[in-house]
Structure formats: C-alpha cells, structure tokens
Length: 382
Image (tube, rainbow, N blue to C red; front, side, top):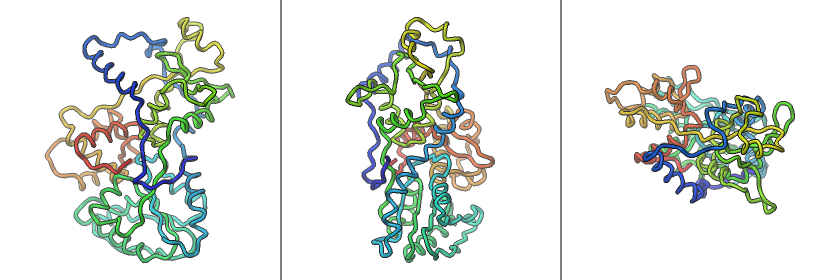
C-alpha cells in the first residue's frame, strides 16, 4: 500500500545504471549508423491493444491514493484536539480524474467549491464560510488563484481564514502551484508542512499490473518486451524481477502512479497477423501464454522546433494552474510577440484539450518536467 510521507522525503525511483548507459550508447549508435538492431518482433507488425478492462484500470489508479488517505487520515479525523486542524497534501501533477475530490465525495466529506476564474481576474476576495462539522476538503488549491496582477487576492484571503480555522481541513495542491504559492504569498507560513504519496516503485507496479493481467475473456495476460520476448512481470523465488523494465518505468514516471499507467498503456500492443505468422523465437517464448501483449518503447514528444522557449512558458503555466483556457493562458504569459504554440503542442501530444481547457498530458509529463528543469525553471519537487 502507498503511504503518505513528508514532501521533503520524496525520493523518485532511480533509473538502472545499465539502462542509462545503454540508452546513451543507443542514441550515439543511431546517430552514427542508424538503428539496425534485430528485435523479436518488428514494431510495424504491431498495433495498439484495445482491451476495455486495461483501459479502465490503467487510466484510473485511484487505489494508490484512496487507500493512503483512508489509513493516514483516520486517526487525525477522530482527534477532537489535533496538533493541527489542517493537513496539506501535495498531489503529483497530471492527476487525471481529480482523485482528491472523488475520494472526498465518495466518503461524504464537504468539498469547498473554488471561485470562477473570471472572479480571480477581477480581484475577488470574498471567502466562503469555512465553518461547520466534519472534514472540509479543498481538492485543488491551484484553482484559488491565477498568476496575474490581481489574481492572488483570493488565495491570500483563503490562507488567512484557514490559519484561524478550528475544523479538520484537508488542502490539496499540485507541486508546481505549491512552489509558486510559497514564493508569491508565503503559503508555507499559513499551512502545515506538506505531505505527499510515497513514490510508486517497481515492486508496486508489478503487484498492480499482476492484479489486472486478465483480458475481457478471462485469459491470463503475459506482458513481453517486443525486442527480447522477456516477461516483464516475471520474478524469481526471492521476488526479484528478472529484468529491469518496471524499474525503468518507475524511474521514468518519477514514481507517479498515473503517469506510469499512461506510459504502460501506451506501450501495450498486439499482433496484427495470426499467431501462426510469429517468428520462431517469439513462438517459443509465448508457447505457454494464454494471451500475450507486446511492449514497445514509447518515445518522448518534442517541443515545436524554433519555439522551445515559448512552449516552456506555456507548459509551466499549465502545470501551475492544472488547466487553463486559451484566453486565461494569455493573461498569465508574458507578451513576447511569438505565434500561438498551443496547436503545435496539441498535435505533438504534449498537451490535451477537454472542452475549452488545455492541460499537460500525463504521458508527456516526464519529458516536460525534464525540459523545464534543464531550462532552469523551478519545479515542485515531484
């Protein structure tokens, strides 16, 4: 089970040393002689798997979040005189379903609705009544401000009220917004030390994927690397995994379960042609499989060439606010005179659109975070 830990103690899984070295050598090799390495299956002979059960589970890893909250908050909620009435939880970026809000509604807790963004732009600062009984949940502190001249009045007023509140209150915030609020309004002076989910490591991913390794017809699924045929969930008597694929996945995702889920789901493929057409090596490897899914590598999306600086500003703004409309995005960005990069970010799969709102895709988050850090942008620690 995933637990809650101090944000300062968060340690992302590390990439296996041999994989990091091999990746660097592979890049050099491709640059010099091209990619001629023979795989067990050619990638062009595969297509993305479309298993309903996997789609549903891989896109909704709420068990990691729900179980941690249920166990960690139970003693605090029954304490009538707690050391602190407030709990601050930093929820990793690209949370796909609003897990804190879903958890709160399912448990019957009161959820505090945020103000409209237009109100924030106008400097609105009237805080709703926070008093009452039971747990109060603020699932997205990033929705209480907008990074604009008048956009911080409301969050300042909210923090002032929270500092005086004598009611159990859970405040959730994404790491990029938290970093900004600490610098902009001293949020760490009003709220307790932040906590977060412990990183999801390779054994956790193994247990999770094992639990969903059944297709719609009840057949057991074996997940194999297309390049080598190795079963990525296989382990020895000691429980140690036979290969490092899940370690690589955990490291690439930064230990964020929903990012790992999206990377995993995007890598799953099936054969276009019948099993009889399998190469001999692949047929031997899969002889005892009830159902085989092949795992291919998923390349990172690239920023629009020639507009990297503007793209990074857009991506940082989206991560801080969670999501923004195109109009709101323009209000929080510096006027540089450059063309709109949103269409390019959409077409490359870095950003996705939900109605009028734009946000960074979970699958693109590792590459986006690395690009921002490499360019010197401050990150939120996750």
